[in-house]
Length: 188
Image (tube, rainbow, N blue to C red):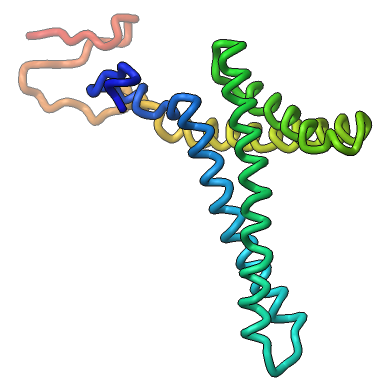
């Protein structure tokens, strides 16, 4: 695949953290969203099926609810993830830069498209909700990155003030008198 994409096999560290190219990113995000929705929906359906069934058949009803609802919720998540990633790649291609505005715009476009059957009003409301949710997610991500980046900044070591140090024993070197020539030694 690297030969088809003309990628250099020896990447620098900065290039290693970039995401996959857009066609592969869409499929990857769609599959990840399906997995997340199916697992989360499976856990939720298991608990809901167990609680809403008669005492004699709780385990069977819980497993039946998982088999019925988890794939549907996984499919819904996959559609959302696929549309979001498609719009993200589209905005990346149009704007030629990858920043939080692409994610916010992708969230708005995804919300608008998924609510389009409800009319323009529902579509605009969903677009606003999608943009706000993605702006919150991006804002929290940027905040966490800035908070954790401070602990990796290089710190200049603090050198002690020579006047606060203990006097040097008489070994032929003495400190100069306090006349403004601080930090210089006189040899005798």
